[in-house]
Amino acid sequence: AGEASEWDPVIAWLLESTDEARPDQLRIVCVDPVREHVQKLRRLAAKLPLVTLVEAAISNINVGAMAVHVLTKGAYEDLLQSVPEHQQEELEMDLTYIRNMSCVGAEHPTLSLCRQKALNKYGVDIKLDLFATEVWTYGRLCQELEFCGCQVLLIDAEGHDAKILQSLVEHCREQDACGQTAWPDVIVFESAGLCNQQEGSESEALALRQMEDCGYTVFLRNHMNTDMVSQRALQRTPRLQKWVDAVYCNRCQRNR
Image (cartoon, rainbow, N blue to C red):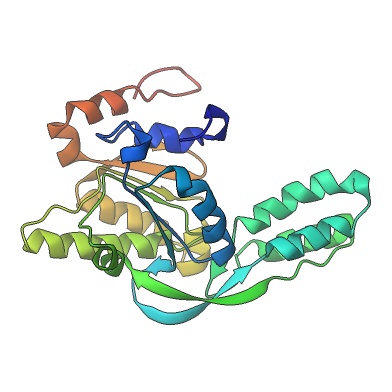
């Protein structure tokens, strides 16, 4: 949906692994704890009738309300207007980064560095607003929206990725016991060290090992993300085999 210039190339590439190529037929669930983000996505998602938006955070436990730290659009615009025009473009890039790292439960691990940089470089003091959000397990998300599983799971949770993977595994094992298959074909999660800062130095390595024990293998990794594919799905799905085989190293130009 929309013009090609509006597409995110990574999302478009991930969707190529699914068995549905028509955008208006894709069933997509998007979860974000920040109301402003959900409202913006709702306008964009109007072109995709089967998209469901959920204002919540996902973790390994259900919580009625938890604080989410947000740089609001209003604060963002006020900060931009507070500096000379020649500094606004560069500050805008820094603030956009902070806008994209809203964090549940505590401030983002790198926020203090970003705040100090902004104070030293632009003379502005960045302050975040606190809002409340519900926290759901992956199983509750599936229950509330009445679906069992998905083909592609993309996680970017600012250091909470490992907990989401734990919750995913719990749900999928419960479905296995009921004779249902809920395991995603492809899982992408952030592995840049934020989980280690939030939950302990080995949390990302443990999450990776857990997914390997559940039958997943890494087929792509960079400094930010780890991409894994279900070996079971790979063995039975020629479409998925072709998609994975097309991945190549940008440095040596060799296929995996």
